[in-house]
Every structure is written in C-alpha cells, then in structure tokens.
Image (cartoon, rainbow, N blue to C red; front, side, top):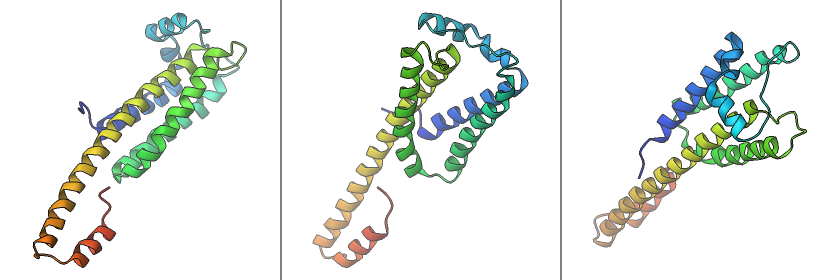
Length: 176
C-alpha cells in the first residue's frame, strides 16, 4: 500500500537538499547545533562535527554538491523519468549505506562524526522509502499493462483485431 507517491517523496528529498545547501552557506551552525543531530550522534557514539576556520572554506563546495544533487533529481522529476529513479535509487542506497557504515565503524576516519553519519542515515531512509514506493508503482504499472494486453489478446482471439496490430503496439510501448 502506497501512502506517499514517488514524486512527492522525491520532491521532499529535493527540498531537503536545497534547504541543507542554503543553510551550509547562510549559517552552518544552524545545522551543527540541531538538538536532534546532537542526540543522534551521541546515541550512535560518534564525534560531534564542528565547523571551524579550517573546514569553513569547503562549505561552499559541499553546499554546491547538495544543490546539484537536488537539482539533478528535480530535473528528472520534471521530465517524469521513472527509469532514472528505478536505476539510481538502489545505487544510492548502497553508497550511503557504505558511507554510514564506514563513518560508524572506523573511529579514526575523518567521516566519524555526527554530520556525516546523520546525513547518510537520512539518505538511507529517503532512498529506502523511494525504493519501496517506486517498486510498488512499477508493480501497479505492470498489472495495468497485463490487463490491457489480456483484453487485446482476447479481441485477437475473437477476431476483432489482428495479431500484427497487437505486436506492433507492443513494440512501440513503454508502459513497463
């Protein structure tokens, strides 16, 4: 049962990335001082991420990265490219699971902080949600296609359509 559509979930992810990008430039302390982020980091026993003069210069690049990720997904949403999301979501899920595992398991890593772990965890959550919703929507599209094909084959069997018409229509379809 789908409680949210894949488009809505993708729009939420894009808004999250755009907001994160904005706050990385405007006031990064807003992100690092979030009580939920601090609580989550302490619960997982990872170090607290700090933004100081040494890493403040890279925030623009990180903000650009977040904005680019959101913009790419937003553009794919506008053209309704379902195949893109069907192929990229499992890859993202795997990558962010690896990053979260690495940031949690290796305490000497520069990624062993609450910022990296929490962002990776949120991406895992978003992508897992998207994966399940997209899979359910694909299943419904396949069921609809099968019913349509069944009715057309019944018409062929009754002599109302020729098999060549149905085959030509199947070759041109992108319903699946």
